[in-house]
Image (cartoon, rainbow over all chains, first blue to last red; front, side, top):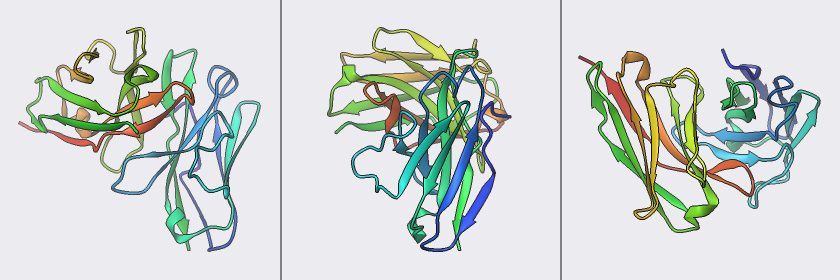
Length: 110
Length: 118
């Protein structure tokens, strides 16, 4: 059971928008920057968003991050079939003195 | 661009020690924290631990006491040792580099499947 809570799954049709939430607490999300990773099955994870809302070069601006208190969200607009993947939030937890991942959200593009 | 190449034994018996090594090619070795992450079959990502540039390590509390991460900067390699493995340690193990400027694991090894069976 992760200290970060994500919905197990979500879905959307091509062209639509979806939002994936990640809920934590004051020792992790409330106090430290969050990273979002995308993992296509059979491949290693890839950084989509770092420091809550920053995008690495090469990541489309269809992906955006936001933060409010002890929760963060990843928004994906203009869904494409290649967006079908697992999405994980991750952050340092000051209480556990360790890095933690959310349980992951499977995005299905219908 | 930093690239990681990892290797190590993929089949272990219960109580044996898991040992994996990751070699860093390209990029700036000193700009990264070096860590390990695993993924059990059909499950999510689990952070095992990491070492920062000053040599300090942090480990997942659930594995503390069994896990050791070490770095050989002269060889641009870092290693994972996990003692007394059980079936619960069977997973796909990734080495990864956390770029200090973004605070995220932006480079990953290819992964090593570790099976634990008597």
